[in-house]
Length: 210
Image (cartoon, rainbow, N blue to C red; front, side, top):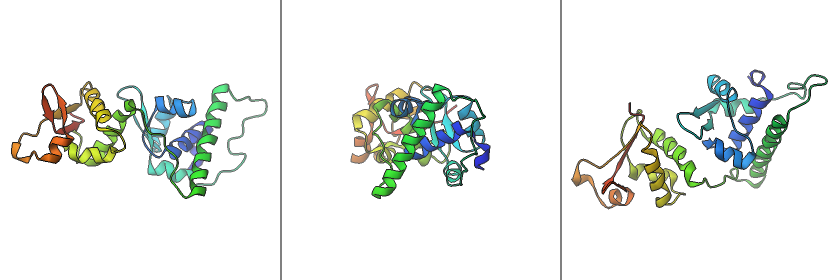
């Protein structure tokens, strides 16, 4: 399996494994000074190692179970050896150093008996986290899910940050936020979880509408 991967692709998998979540190119650049771009993300997606969200910038990426599994396969020291006289570019050297930083994050977490240290995302990165949380809850793209179910999945972010991200998401053509049509179903929890837009409370989110 690992033989299918280039050294660069393998390095990106290590970074995504260390983060253990969907991460945007902007945040990857902030943390590791690299971005996962074409053709690397296309190859990793095609091989089933990574899932990328590319409908809007910044692109977002998350490692799959298959990607995590391939990292557990043994490598040999000569597997990705550059040919004699071949020099690595500055970009390649930065990518490989970024993978070393990510690998150390995993090693330190294992040594300390904790999960890998994850930087709290900036508000803009909540867009991708909301989409990921929605995917976990929705039976199919376009199904409506209650904000009372979605907010606990991103509870480390404040309500104000999540509200701003939800409003941003409405700029996407596949996103809808609607009020609960049956008033008797609106209780204290629904009112607390709602986002106020256009003079009304919105209680339900749908992503993937065409």
